[in-house]
Image (cartoon, rainbow, N blue to C red; front, side, top):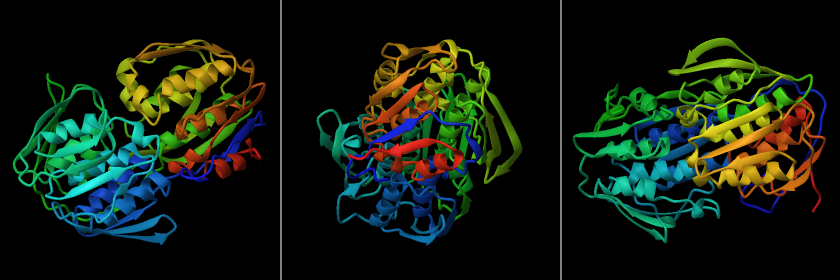
Length: 450
């Protein structure tokens, strides 16, 4: 599948039990950061299990453009020969980040305090997403940004020649914004401080410490205070990337709604700032079991077994949990459609500005499939129909969003009639083996001849 080529329509038909092992790709968040932090070291970082989706491959290309040597050794084995903190070279061409909001925002942060200029662009979806939430705090370091109206790509970033350290309170929960500021702080003198009122995924903090940065995290009355000493010499690492919990969400949720299913997802990351979906599913009555709990590379991991759960109940998801599962709400709403009662999801305005307006996209598709959805600016509710009662029989728009496409393909596995997605090509950005993996488990997803 290609997220940059012609549309690939797919139809998901009701299927028999999903059975077997689902080795989902490496964690996307950790894969992006492994490449970027490796580029900011002097010496060679080795990476195993890198997600080789288009988003991460675009970040690898960007690191090469900034002067790092990034080598694909095959089989998910990569190496990065870095240039050190403050060592980025000025790229000769435009940096194309494809569909990746994480990639572009982290890379902007990493180059923002070096005296170089870079221009960023992306696909139609990424070029429609707001960048001001990152460029505003980066301007405090002395960085300049010039883009399209509304702070959108294509955008040129002029790095600060004499950066100053920053103290910044993140206005809305966003790991991307926090990470961009911390990456910019690496090449600023003194201490850069980031304060977040609600904890977001903390891979950046954990990995910066692992690479040798002097970084502390303290819970205070102000919130979570992260303090970074600038201008460190980062030390190359050997990184084993755990499997992505956001990708695991799709085979897991499919197993919960397809009768007779029993699926094992091995070696998935269970970082507490990422595992909110699994907590929520358990509260709904999902049959989930964590096996072989362990720690790898500073991250908790386990094997997750998911079995058909016919008695799911609607719940209210605590708004403070949103940051730990923000990417999983689309597929959660699919599970909610097969639950009894209402699943209420408040505090999710971030979903309006992801790869698409995910509340709008899921609401339209679920309604077309016969499910009642109510929504506001920062909340939505799905009224479940119970197991076996979701009609389906519709074609939905993926709106260039990989998670929307996969969510509706999961929906079609358990509806009364098939569900077609108008374009499944964006799935390649994060989960290039989704189609083949789900087929091995027993799904009935077919490409539609155009």
